[in-house]
Image 1 (cartoon, one colour):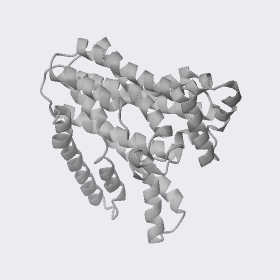
Image 2: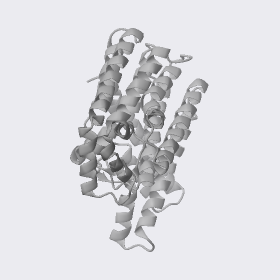
Image 3: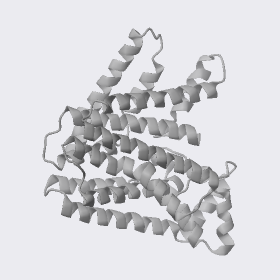
Image 4: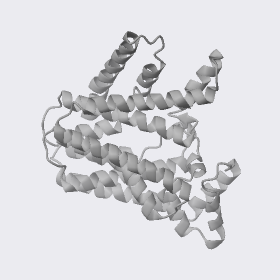
Length: 344
């Protein structure tokens, strides 16, 4: 088993489970008869690929130092920040599914209906899911506050870039911006840096490094962009049984993706009006199928696939030159491929 996977399974997951058990006990001590929020968050952080902690682990391992308690707290904070981001993202997009099950606000609404509680089930579900996301961010902030000063600066940058990227995502969709520049900036900030470069920087800072080497910053940005490009393709062409999310949500929300930017440049003039349907909440299954076919036929899908492959090749070449020999170098190449080539 790779060292990062063993770290997640053997140390990080038990640490998070213990943290959430303690939080439920604290809620009981506060006098709350219901602990739905910490229970829901405990389930949420018990799943996923843990990519961000794994990149953080290898950012620390570059130094050759042993993983200590500060690395554990940083990786747990990253998982809680991710839970916050996904929960709020599902609320903003009104997504019905996440990881193959109903999204958190849908789960809370269903529980409300099941028990026949007072008020609007959907409003309740959205409010409690928002509170769960806020609570997850609060726990992440609590953990990050215990990190060394240099690591806290990196953490603040991760949060800043995530927030700016999400803002661009919303603003680009509302303005129906189809430019490649906005799509690429959104991909890098909203997902790329927050998934790869930021965690690598955080791990390096925890090991006492003033900054991640420039070549590994470039590695992180390339892999992070490839990760988001794959996410964009899965949102349109993926198998919902594997991705855990309905196909067509990104088209319905009008997210500013590089796939749509490529289509705007590559679709024949007679078919460009198809893009006017992107961002419509009334998008039908027929519309989605026609758009999907057009995105493939014009070559936009292949262009994005080539960009993903090129990013991974360049990133692995950078890792082979910049990372220490042995397991770190190979792990960075393997993790780049895992982030970019996934099918779920």
